[in-house]
Amino acid sequence: MADFNYEGLWNETMLQLWNDMGDEEFAGWFLDMKYLRAGEDSIVIGFPSAFHRDKVKCHFQGVIKSILNKLTDRKITLEYEVVKKTELVILDT
Image 1 (tube, rainbow, N blue to C red):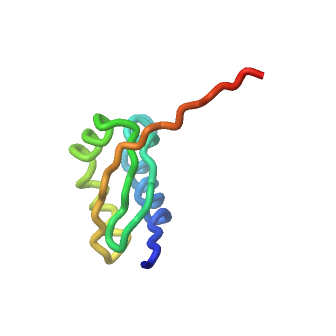
Image 2: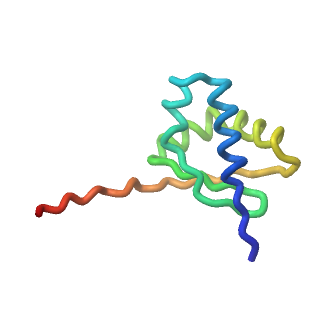
């Protein structure tokens, strides 16, 4: 099975989106998203909550896919997962 790594493509997509949106709007919606992995024609993105995932998917999926299509000759699909933030454990010493 081949490994696909589109993290560079994802980062370029986010950079273009940031340039188009500006700091505040981009930070509010996209800083907590994380590239998780890729398949041959897909990118899997992690979100901290279902609410966050649903809002980005509803309001920004089209523009994200548009940027991806401009950057590559592949039709990349987006997949979304809710990823729990790692809990910090404080140990008493």
